[in-house]
Picture 1 (cartoon, chains in turn red, green):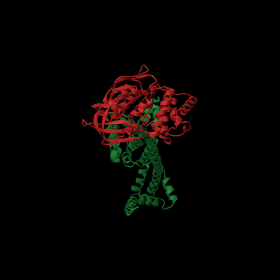
Picture 2: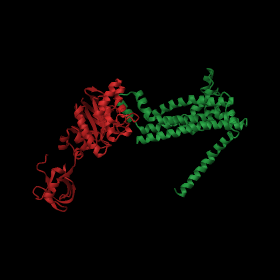
Picture 3: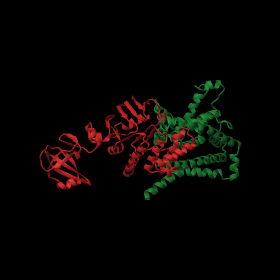
Length: 315
Length: 271
């Protein structure tokens, strides 16, 4: 199911949380709304879900204008950042809640809950209570609960925000696989660019309530529309007055066509090394090298080098 | 534990002893000084029985009504924005902020023959003052805020996310309230109800003012105890009545302590 957002605005008092946002989310895609905290991304998700009403603009889901439709009739699955489990219900009751509301027969609910718990790998936890689950398990329960009603759209608010690094990584992969299995149009909100690049097939980058750029992750990384997107989507540095990626720069020993500079620090991060160079024009930049390049060139602090764009760099 | 701690503990215990411990022990001693027989005959006197019955009847009306009003008002305050919310919130604290006697006097002014409500009601043959109806009103007034004040902090702490989740899953207001909101505040409600019961059974000032103290008709247990003491110098009767009241209150306090434990565990769960 596709989603169209047309000129959405939402203000809280005098703050413009979301300002004149338009975006198209294609059917079956996994779209990440990416932005720093306070950029309005969570508000935008709430506007899609109907939990917040826009001051202006329309929300169209699958051709239906749902702007004035209560969230309970929008057929959306919403996963909260805190997962919002029903604490006094066990896992099976949580997952079956939406079906019970829809007055499905008990046998059908049981069967569907079983199927979903198998899908999210919680079959053995059906009678546990949320307080007895780990963070990752609660997250998967929340997903199963949202999926139970066969939503037209799945909305995830900072889905991995509260998890530790290992579980986070695991769940990201798992969500991607799950999305390939069930193919429901999914929108997730995150402030983590790496997460967004890894999971999503479409990005919507927001800043200060506005959409700055949208498109597929690689295209945005390669040709960011603004310095903000450039800096937000990956490592960046300034060279010759232009924001650039540090892996698009290289160090050379000859000064031919390169800007002269002196190495001020070398930080080795396993495979990658970050070399900071004070340039002859007084600015400082840093260059990302592989460990091999570093050792081959015999670089050390205080060495004079030339810095230039890699000739194979894509500009 | 250092010396200072022991000293502090001693001071607190002595303070509690003087204020509560000694008087209660003395009261129990006096009530049972002549054995269980005289105590039993005192508390089974017709006056005592009817006073206890009236107190329980008043509680049976005031507690459920204040529970419903308290839950409703708590949800309004914690979940809705409306004009005059601050004032609304504050009004509920008036009963505990002012002396119950003042509440009683205010009720008399409103419901007497010359009062705003009194005159029209009397014309329809409804007499509020010096009747059980007046006692119920006075009791409801003084025990108004307890349920509300127990629930609001819990509602704010639980937040709206579970309710929002229920909504996105298709649940309407009633289902969300009964299946999601109420279960998450149930211990707070129980705690508020226990406080309301304790206050309802023990209320003296406001009730005395509006009751007219008609024996067998508008005499609640606390008033009966005071009356015994003050009018008839029947000290055994008042000691015995007081012991009954104290036992009821202690039972309520015990339940309260258990609920507080549940509530704490629930809060740990929420963290």
